[in-house]
Every structure is written in structure tokens, then in C-alpha cells.
Amino acid sequence: MALLPPSLSLAEVVSPFLSDIYKPSLLNYSIPMKTTKFIITLMLMNLSLMWAGGAQDSSIPSKNETIETSITIQDSLGRTVVLPGVPERIVQAGSSAFLVNDALFLFPEARERVVGMADGNQGRGNFLPIVDPSYDEKIIFPRTINIEEILSASPDLVIMKDFLFSKYDKEFQKVGLPVIYMDLESPEAWERDLAILGQIFGNPQRAMDLQNLFSEYTMNVVNPLEGLKSEDRKKSLILYYSEKDGTGAFQVPPLTFIQTKMLEMTGSDPVWTDADMGTRWTTVGFEQIAAWNPDQIFLISYRTPVSEVLNIMKENPYWMELSVNQGGEIHPFPMDFHSWDQPDPRWLLGLQWMAFVSHNEIFPETDMNLKAQQFFADFYDISEEDYSNKIYPIVEGLE
Image (cartoon, rainbow, N blue to C red; front, side):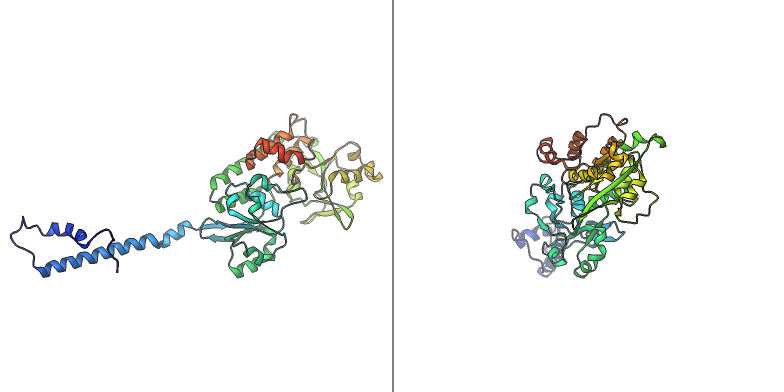
């Protein structure tokens, strides 16, 4: 039974109602005591119901209110994930960590809500401490991780790259932990995944602003090249150098990878279009490279210093015979903490740089240092001072 508010006495509650019913000045008779008691009892019952109803409304949300606060997301794999609300403790886990983390921190809310992430250092240091002053307070996981380690961070949402679905998802289902899988491997995927992140962080406006920035950066390259004649397009090759057990190898990306897309968008034709490269980087020998005889080579090396790779190519007598080498048309991709060829937001910088290298007659005044400074300001709100002091000193490969 509801109680009277402590500040009111029974008389104070009842008297206003009685004054309307029992007015001796207007009536010549009095109300019998039994009737009075009956009226008071009815009024107290009504007040009790009113106070009980008010308490119920303020403490228990209705079904409609619960539905309104939930978030329904379709992730990169087409899975529908329903979250009870905007997640407050987000964990990124698994390999390819920096791709996901650099996407998350395009949103200012990530600084507070991302509580843990996998190590994204590719050997050149960590970028995110420049973006997030509280980075040192985050939980940094190894790239290979188990469910128990993830649960130790008490997340209400986990975000991973989509290729990790088969490895982890059954375990996540067992513990009932929601997971969003992201693609981030093409311009189209980025547009979709930015919208997903806008839902996760409850900031769809930032998602739209980022989509517009991606489009602006892309169109600034694509539009000037729109009327390029076929004979003016370069025949180009992308080579990724890697070492395993002391042995180096060159690899070529599939036609669907963002590196190939960037090449095509910047006025070049990939020389390996007739080869069946499958869905992964494919090792190719020198004979095949020589047969392709590209006009230019864009060189990628994530771990081995690119200067060492260039020395291998310049000192090898076979490589020295290639016209692309003799003409100085081997161009290492620029990098700061990460190489600008990868499906990190930096691919937009790599796109501008490739266009300048391939067609500097169309982009003659390109200052890639200024472009990089503007990029980090636009996407991560990094000041000119922080760019000059914390990013520019480790930048390599600007031409």
C-alpha cells in the first residue's frame, strides 16, 4: 500500500476535497459521520492508486521505451546484431588491429568508450597515443587472444575484422557477447562501415561527415583524371616485399584489393590483370616481373626497411637490366606509423601520392607534406604542431 508523502498530514490531503463537498455555509444540514468516513476512504484509495501508478511509471520502462533505446545493426557480414543501447565498453580484438582501431578513433567517442584493443604496432610505433591522451589507460591485448582474455575487460561490444568470424564466433555465441565484424577493404566497404560506426557511437552526423570527406578526397583525384586517354595511362605493377626465414619474396595483390583499386583510380592499368591471383597476395618470380615489363613499380615493405629492398633491386644484375629500374620508376610507398597503401584511412593519402607520381603533369603543385598535415587534421583533429612534432619526423617516402 502506498504511503502518504511525509511532508503532508492526512488532514492536509483530505481537507481540499471535503471543502467542495461539505460547505456548512451553503447547506442547512450536516453529513452523517458514516458518510464522511466512506468518502474519506474512497479518496484515500484513489490517492493510493495515483501514487502507486506514479511510482511505477518512474521506475519501470515500458516495452515501447525499451525498443526505442535499442540499436539494430547489420554488420559487414550481413549479420543482424541488436544492442540494448549505445555501448559504453567497447573492445577491439584480433589481428589486423590497427585497421579497425584507426577506424574507431575517427570518432571522438572512441577515446572514452574503447576500453581495450589489440596491439596495432607494425614496427614503427603506435599512432593512437597522438589521438587519445588516455591511450596508456587502455587494455592492450596480444593479437592472438582467447575469449577469456576478452571477457576480462567486461565489454558490452566486441569489434573484429570479418575474416576472424569462423575462428571466434561460436565462442562468442556461447557467452552471449555481441560482436560486430568489419570489412574496411575497399572504398565501398569504408562507406558502409563508417555508417555502422556512426550507429555504434550514437553519432550518425560524424559518420556522414566522414563519408563526405572520403568522397571529397577521392574525387579530388578521380575527377582530374576522368578524361585521360588510354595511351596516357601507365602500365604499372604493385609489389609487396616480405621475408620469411631469411628469404625474401615479391608478391602481387588480387585485383579486388584496395591497392589495385588505388592504382586504377590514379590513371594506371595493372599489368597483372590476365594472371589468376586468387584472393590473397601471390608470390611472383623475377621472370614474370620482367615479362610484364611495367612502366613503373609501386613498392611496399611493412617490416624490412624499404631502403634495403631498393638496394636488393638496384644491385642485382637482373633487376638492373629492367627499364623500370634504369628509368628510376620504382617508387616506395610513403609511410608514417603505417604504410599508405593499406586499407587504413591512410589509403586516401596513398591515392593522392600515386596520382602525383603517375601524372604529375595533371597534379604539378602537389605538396604531399601539406596533404598529410591536412589529412590528419580532417580525420583525427590533430593540430599542425602535433603533426610537425609527432608524425612528420617518422614519415618516409615523400617525393
